[in-house]
Amino acid sequence: MRNSVLRLLRLLVALRILTLAGLCHCQAAESLDELNAKAEKGDAAAQFILGFMHEKGQGVTRDEAEAVKWYRKAADQGLANAQFNLGVMRANGRGATQDEAEAVKWYRKAADQDHASGQFNLGMMYANGQGVTKNEAEAVKWYRKAADQGLADAQSNLGFMYQKGQGVAKDEAEAVKWYRKAADQGLPNAQFNLGGMYTDGRGVPKDELQAYMWFLLAGAAGREDARAQISRIEQTLTPSQRAEGQRLAGLFQARKSSPSESPIPREAIAQSRPESTATGFFITDDGYFITNEHVAGDRANVRILTGAGAVSAKVVKVDKLNDLSLLKVDGKFAALPVSSSRGVRLGASVATVGFPNVGLQGYSPKLAKGEIGGLSGALDDARHFQISAPIQPGNSGGALVDELGNVIGIVASKLNPKAALATSGALAENVSYAVKSSFLLGFLESVPEIAARLKDPNTERRKFEDVVNSVEQATALVLVY
Image (cartoon, rainbow, N blue to C red; front, side, top):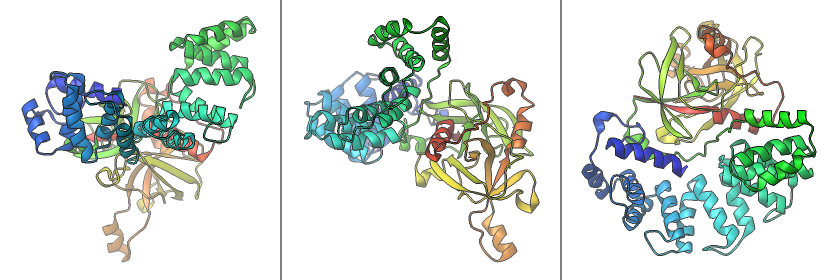
């Protein structure tokens, strides 16, 4: 997460504007003097940015003591990113005397704001007895909070605690679960440990082919001890099995999760003053992205906030009639399968993940769950489903998924309360609409290069929490300027 901020700030200094990777209009360019002036007046986002610039020597002389000064000012105002970075500085004796107890204090403040990296570091301090009395159960508690937000290091450490029975009852199946989550995100340590679990049949059926694949991935990422395991397993596998393991490793793509704290301070997003915010989702691994046309029409200036930061999006094609917009972003992303909506039945359970009312509800993704309340929309519009999921401003463009995690609609609108009041004399509750996915599939047929990239619909049932996690990974905040 801090690497994402560093990349953003390098771009900021190179352009000498307060954009944080393009989140501000170029017309709002600010000099370093103006940034200092804002910070001196108590602007927490400006204080954080100055702290980072001084810590890394970006655009200013590197001065870790000055970095600590600005981090502390922002941290005292409650900025979680600043609290976390200040904790790191104090833990390592950078810019101030090393003080692990002080580091714990700031990690805890960030952790209490659901800052995933703060939670992870606080767990590490409890696990090692640094700056606080060693308490493995407390370490597990904080690892779990960060792991639930998708932080791979926390997932891996939580898996280790379950494997060894430290701070929690030993449960090798649970260890495998958390190792797999981290391994799927490309964490070499977790891949190595998962390979070991498959080798010995601990928490999972013994499977040398799976072990081989995970050791190959860990070795390719730099785990030297994985090479010995690779050599050992290759002696037991047939040539075709080795080829299959290598094929599987070659097909592997890390699926990055997104901890709920933004890689950019919330204040910086707010300062960028987008004209509107909404939701969208990836439909291909190489960055094709869907939202509503009323969110991002032709020539819209759009940025999408992903786990790697804010990235520019190009509007490829729009369908005004069906309120659909296809965008393209450079990079690799988790994507959702799109299924035909023809077989959807009245009363079917549906859910969506999105970013409603970010100014009030915050920048972390929110879940809304409901049912198909009608097989047509307002005035019997056959293009829409009526849904009971509680939709708010900002949910527009989000994926409406079924219980298998397949996209069956795109959230579009809610019933206008004034119109309902004028018509019936009563306010309608939880009446919202989604464009049916069959219209999306028809729209995508006009872009032939996408058809081959779409994922096959899911057919196996999973835990609802796992479905939600998949939707969350493929969903992103849309910023329109």
